[in-house]
Image (cartoon, rainbow, N blue to C red; front, top):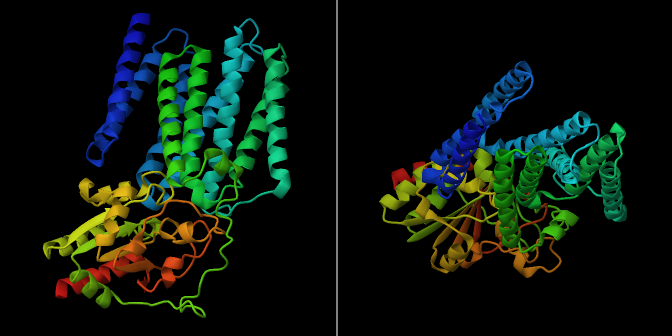
Amino acid sequence: MTTLVSVGYIVAFVLFIYGLMGMTGPRTAVRGNWIAAAGMTVAVVATLLQPGMGNWLLIALGLGIGAVIGVPAARRVKMTAMPQMVALFNGVGGGAVALIAWVEFRVTTGYEAEPLYVAIASLFAAIVGSVSFWGSGVAFGKLQELLPGRPVTLGRLQQPLNIVLLAAALACAVIIAAGGRSEWLIIGVLVAAGLIGVMVVLPIGGADMPVVISLLNAFTGLSAAAMGLALDNTALIVAGMIVGASGSILTNLMAQAMNRSIPAILAGGFGSGGGGGAVAAGGGGDRPVRSTSAADAAIQLAYAGRVMVVPGYGLAVAQAQHAVREMADLLEAKGIDVAYAVHPVAGRMPGHMNVLLAEADVPYESLKEMDESNSAFPQVDVSLVIGANDVTNPAAQSDPNSPIYGMPILHVTSSRSVIVLKRSMGSGFAGIDNALFTDPKTAMLFGDAKESVGGIVEELKSL
């Protein structure tokens, strides 16, 4: 039986890695996901085959409850709600690890007679898993708009409080590792770590949320790997390390895309406003806004040689990706080159726009990364910005006082003209004005993005 379990784990690892390789492109992503899921199934079965697994009724009950909740939730979730679902599901993983650490403390009577590394690994898993669970819960609340998307801070008390909470969690952990047996100690670890998760994510503004989701995902993976070490479970170690490593790499890449360090992101405050209120739809003072219609936008696009579509969260909200694909097909039939400029942090989670466009069967080669897009903008006749706000805001380059100053953006103003599709002149997730809207090159097409693109499509058909 031991040999069979070992073989099962090896098969699961191969499937994990092979499935992860499939995630490198939209054409193979679905297949890669199924392969990785098959690997996890093999790992679970192999684990259940180990002697002394415990109460099979409780195991079956847990699997059943998880399937009843998880499968319908995953099938019914709208693409606009995918970021918060990712945050929620990721947090559940961290919470499960924290609970396992608590159970391990109880079963071993405070890790009595266990090697020191077991206690250290379990306590590390408890702290990081609890931070991930509660932090992901706050991220979910912000994305779901149950909590304010803006930073919520205690001012100067914020960082001292975080340090006190961390010290409390570490103090309880050290006492346990030194031989403390009181269950209140492990509860203290979990509570203090949970409060850290809440207090660290609350001050983080919406513009940083894609990075936060990725970071918390890495935390969950690291906590799972540590718990696997404590339990001597090879599958948990390997799966956790894959998630932790990939999440850490992605977090670093996302932070670089925003030209910000991870400590600066965790310090919070980004997206706190500072740009004043949003400009009124009709403009204000010496900042006039030029509006356009679907008919005029269609004519402008039809006579362009090269069009760059810049998708953002507004595209997801309106579910306009299929209408955009239809519009692109009509333009390409007229001999117009159409491409898509995708900013690394567009939307509210890593790869959000890529997933949306892949859902509409947009060719992968048409998706251009930020550097490639910025090189192409000077040759673009029309940039069509659909709900992308902060990632196109010129203030990131021109206004040293802006909260997003220094963040790399898509240089849409380098194109010959810009059409922005938005419901209103409201600010983006960072909570600041966008000077792009008042740029002389820009025309605003107000309304629901799907309806606006649909209007453009109908006009194109009649040209």
